[in-house]
Length: 62
Image 1 (cartoon, rainbow, N blue to C red):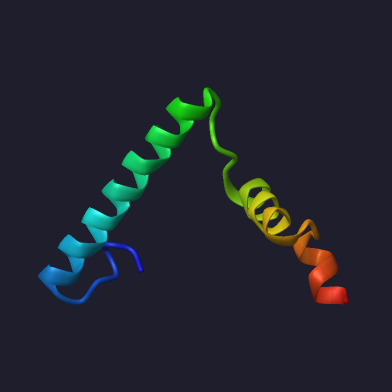
Image 2 (image 1 turned 30 degrees about the vertical axis):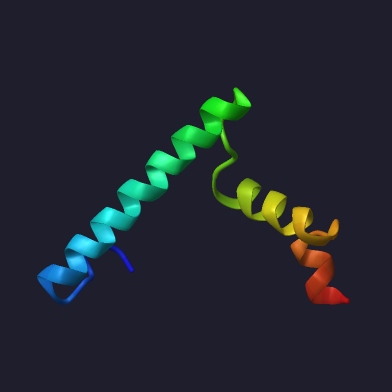
């Protein structure tokens, strides 16, 4: 849920904090690896393959 969709002020603050923490962690990982992390569909496919070596599409078909 995005910060704009949160119902309460507490929820908005929590969503904003989570987004900031995720961005900070992403920058840390990118700095450690020396390259940018993949974004969007490329990242989804990369993360899916890393778990068991199969793509998301092949998991759904089989």
